[in-house]
Image 1: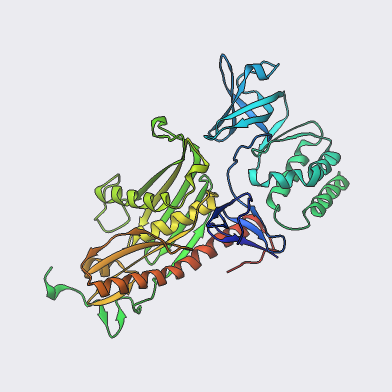
Image 2: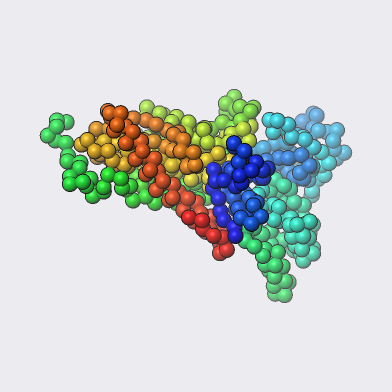
Amino acid sequence: MNKIILPGEKVSDKPEQMPGTYIHDGKTYADVISLYDEEGKKSVPLEGMYLPRAEDYIVGVVCDVRFAGYNINIAPSFNAFLSGRESRDKFELGDVVFAKIAEVDEVNSVALTDARRLTGGKMIEVSPVKIPRVIGKKNSMVNMIIDSTKSEVYIGRNGRIWMSGGDIELTVRAIQKVEQEAHVSGLTDRVKKFLEDEAESE
Amino acid sequence: MTEKEKPELFVHGKRLDGRTVEDLRPLKIQAGVLNSADGSAFVQWGNNKVLAGVYGPRECIPKHDSDPYKAVLKCRYNMAPFCSSGEHSRSGPSRRSTELSKVIREVFEGLILTDKYPKTMIEIYIEVLQSDGGTRCAAVTAAAVALADAGIPMRDMVAAVASGKIQEHIVADLGKDEDNYGQSDFPVAVSWRDKEILLFQMDGLLTRQQFEHALNLSISTVEKVKVLQKEALLRSFEEKNGSPRVNLNL
């Protein structure tokens, strides 16, 4: 059974590393409003900002071009740095890029690498805490959406999703459905049905 | 005002509005009422109407306020010019609102895990639309719900209530007349889990016994506020996500 827990509620009597929790006196407590799975003893945050982690892929927007590289906006008021040496392409102000986080230091300065430009297309934002559901287990959710809509989709862990080609409008609606119903069980089946129904109606 | 003109605040075990010593005024809390704020809450507490909006963590402006190790918390408590009959008739900062902004900020500095978001700021805006005594407690209560609604990481939640002394009786949740004509007013904010005291102010005189009694009364009354805060957050979440299968753990 799932239940909603609020900041300060106990998640576990043991110290455990989980998103949206903190450890105090050897016990784990929630720090944001979360969904707690009593059988699996797992807590999933329902609200929250993006906290950058190394190896995450993000979708960002170039917001400053400097001599040594680029400042790339990855969340509201959160910029990361992409060194000019780390990228073969040249970017311009306003370019949308897909990049990997190379490292995050102790004061949350972020260095990016493996950047590539995304041209054309459409970018939407969803809550960063819902991104794991949009991706699904072993990419199952996003692959299902792509198979049905034939769009090209890039998902950033920071909550930004870029897409191009295919039925963009349907892709957006499917992703929004996932975001809205992320915590209700049987999500994959419902999204599958939604996509099938849409395909039939055309 | 002389002794004679004071209204009778406590008659036959009942207060002005018919409450007993430990009753709260009617309290209604709603979470997520504003679209453009990251988190928000509206509290109607008796005749108090308090709106809280929360932003952040976002880029710290002005830059020199920012802290490379943690998020900076900013708080503004403001009374609308129309919130009461004349006493607060000019908008803008006053001695009183500056003080309340400070004490409310300090409540949340003890709760928000600011080191998760260095170099940013978190803003809490509290607007008192209508005031009727106990607005600082309503403001803390509203701001806590708004912060949880915004998904800002917090160690614990907080609720607040004032108790005080009217005609030698210790009572919970003072109304405006009880505050103005009573003997003592004593607002307390208490965290949900650890029962930590995060705000503590006192006005008037209490003996040691009365003080202990009032503090215990506040701590037990806060539980009622806590239940409503929790309900408000769960309700708002249900509405936002339209989920039928989640157990409302009230």
